[in-house]
Image (tube, rainbow, N blue to C red; front, side):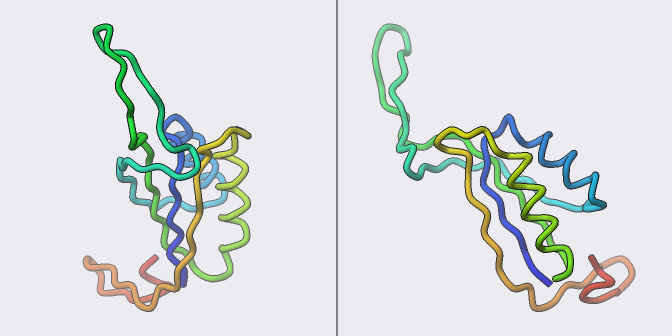
Length: 112
């Protein structure tokens, strides 16, 4: 099992969710986060004063999958989140040792 963590631009969330749904990935967790990478941040004007926004709004998506789904999930997310501009995001894949569905007691692959 793998845990896929994705950091993307907020306006791409629905595109990614829909694309994952199309390949039968229906369970995911979404968190609104702030951060920066090479994009660094940007300057904005507020009431005539310029200030720097160091942390940009992003969305973090977490998806637990079985190993066989990994290649399809990565390709799907990459395609759906792509804009071609700096700040498109990152995908992190980590091993997932154990999963339990609380309601039924199912474990590991069956719990996903």
